[in-house]
Image: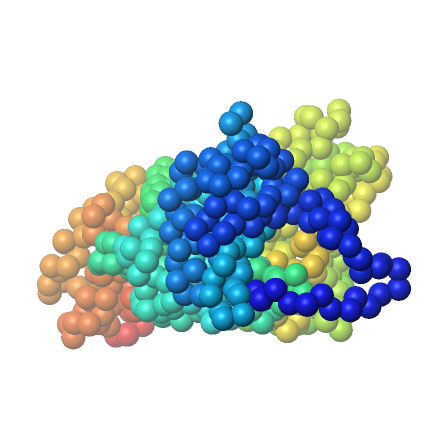
Length: 510
Length: 122
């Protein structure tokens, strides 16, 4: 910086300093530390702020005294940088600390420029020091927070990574790197395809969806093989969520990954167990029923009517037992998402008549009457829908110990077929109605306590109907009776249960 | 007139006995076995219908079915598969079975199916 002639200062209120005294005052009281040295680095002038920061008087700072203000750990570096700047004829810029004799440490941003004479020779240095304690504190805090986050990412027992807008790995934690069998560094910049080719484009497709919709995908199940254990099929549960910048655009996608291979194995074991349990339980029941029917048929031939009736009652009980076993197995299947449907076209009225006939045989007291018809063929699981109708009818019978009429209404609308079972029995209290289709729910109340039931029949029925694309509901008045209904779509529009779910607005706001 | 012969294969002796009683009362000749191997190795005295349990203690009923249906000498024997699991119906179809019945079954339903399929390929 050449010492220039003072230039005219243009401004409304401020007056350019007129005297040397004025200049001195300005320099002394400036809100930054100001210093001047000769070409050998001996201090010529320091202002008040400098003295404050250095914790020494200007007298003490003279000559080489000012060097004592430098923090011993930074002294060497400061000098090196200063000489370097001087050599390169550049401005000296650095961050370093002052340490006062009392031990107070202050972080500073220091800068200095060479003072040159008219021949361009260095005659000294002019510099400033600015207190950057606050800035340093914020930097430290940020670094601490960053370190904390990194520790959390690395130690949380879940795989995490961040994809950039081009679906390339930007950040990845150790857990996920281990899952993939490739070091974290070797993930950066690559696509999922390159890291786990066995996924094909399953993951990529979902990531692209998140990019497009800006909505997270939760609970995605993927399967494949990784380099960590080649040849072994693995299963992962993944969540993808978009990362938005302040102005709303998507800058990346975060992903959480959990290895669920073991859980899948346990599920398969449970399935196997259930299959075996089903077989085991049904075996003695099968021969019980078979022997019973053989005896019944032989005694019928002999004309023993009384015995035939009794055996009929026995058979009905065995059927109840079978239903209970089936219900327990179904519950477990529903819980595990393993309830499968076998859909086909079938005549609805035929099924209804079949079930009514079968159930009518179990009761002499009650009269099952059908009203209306649909004349329609629908697409669905005939067996399961029959199960629902059976459930409605057995409930109607169960809860009408005193009244004999049960009416089955069937009808068609433009889009659906509808079936209602109406009984005139004990009815259901109003506050129970919303809970009827919940698992294990049993209506409380005197009339109901004496009626057996596990409370899962309606739950299973509601699961079946809703997965077949229909609606199920009940109306009732205590003491007067109940009506249970379901609808099923006409055009085989079965909802396809997806394992991954797009989180929609409705789901977010419940 | 010769009675039609039914071979029943199931790993539970009680069920075998009950089915045998049912079928004999209905006028059929019945041979029973708990052993899947016997079914594989049947020769000459072929039954007019086979009632086959899908799961027979280590033997896979659908494999037996596929095998019989692929052999020239046995492919015309009607096979009805029995299973405790209703989901098996599709597997039965794929194995080439002529029909399927779930356990526990109604006697009249079993008899109706046997009647329907027996000797139909003669």
